[in-house]
Amino acid sequence: MTDLHRLSIREISEGLAAAKFSSRELTEHYLKRIAKIDPQVRSYVTVTNEVALAQADAADALRQAGQATALTGIPVAHKDIFCTQGIKTSAGSKMLDNFISPYDATVVAQGKNAGLVTLGKVNMDEFAMGSTSESSFYGATKNPWALDHVPGGSSGGSAAVVAADLAPFATGTDTGGSIRQPASFCGLTGLKPTYGRVSRYGIIAYASSLDQAGPMARSAEDCAYLMNVMAGHDSKDSTSMDKAVEDYVANLNATTLKGLRIGIPKQYFNVAGLDAAVKARVEESLKKLEELGAVVVEIDLNMTESYVPTYYLIAPAEASSNLSRYDGVRYGYRAENPQDILDLYKRSRSEGFGAEVQRRILIGTYALSAGYYDAYYVKAQKVRRLIQQDFLKAFEQVDVIAAPTAPTTAYKIGASLDPVEMYLGDIYTIAVNLAGLPAISAPVGFDQDHLPVGLQLIGNYWSESQLLSVVHQYQQATDWHTQRAAIAEENA
Image 1 (cartoon, rainbow, N blue to C red):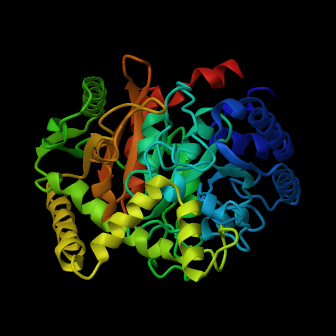
Image 2: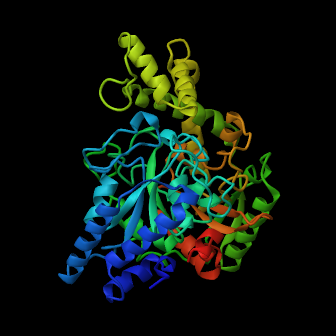
Image 3: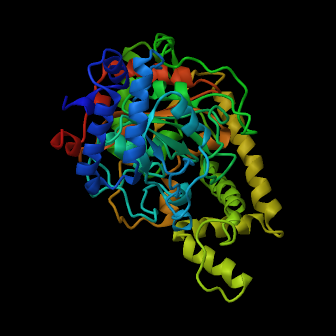
């Protein structure tokens, strides 16, 4: 079969179960596409050909023995921030270019237990710091919809592999929008779960109180299949919640759209820099949801102006602390011929970290310094609580909150955006991480340059199933999620 990459996860699962094709045939199909197409997209850091084929053969043996799960034998790509035993795990950084992980992240281990086949590790902004995937040590990944545009970040490689049909679905992490924004830029569905829903064990840390792993795929249904594997309590992660996991696939039609109250924050639609085409597509998607039975309610989120300054104090502060371990002594990059221990530390870190990582370490170290800790970091944490309360107050009136995922479509590679401009692009996504809430981005159309636009739906705590169900029903009535980038079609 030449069109295996066009199948949904459900169709792949059913095809494997009916022996229409084997996992090895499916895996070989994707590996051939990667070899042919990825030199243009540059989404993979490491392609694990031998590992993937061995896992595919093992999956086929399990299926023949009657021991397969719904996902046994289906390929997946992992963001290169998930530790993967025996495979380089770089976090997109020169600092970890030589790091071979001795263990699996819980998300990777759960995938293996479910029979998923690892195609490889995909590119990302260095240490997940960025919105374009241009800060990677391995160079910029390109957006399959327009190769001169970015795929978003930091999970840009995860978005690009799915959009180019180089993997059926992928794992990502979201610290301030790093699943949702690239999903929006690449015309995909991406879910950021409630903080604590998915284990962070084995994820290379950026900002520990904000990082959360989630699925990226073409549709809500495909994301639900991966969430069934990723979600759950993990005793190795002290922030993991011991809460029963729902069957996200079985619940895809559980939420009725009739009478569903969708909150529209008026502050979100008056943000300077909101592109007219993005606003129009989002408003059209809301009208469609109204046609399907939902009720749109205007709400206030009064803390909107505090999102960016609060996030860009807390996240860099935690990054400064987390990245202090990379000193050239224990593992990772080590400067050559240091004169003394101070020279070793200074040169290892200045040579091993890129500009954006250094910038955030400096901001965070300043915010945590003795003279400024109370004035900046402690104050930001207090404002964070007010942001959370603002959302909880809103959820007394509505079931979900709607917003654009990003104020614009994908930027051009090398666009002269200064760091502050780039940070302001996170206005719609970062509050969700500050509050620990779940949110999903889904494709809702294109701008005048045929670049994808995303709608974001934000839910109350533990409402992943509801968010997936709402988007699934929207996708049953629309076809935006089935649209494919030209590079995927040309190489079908």
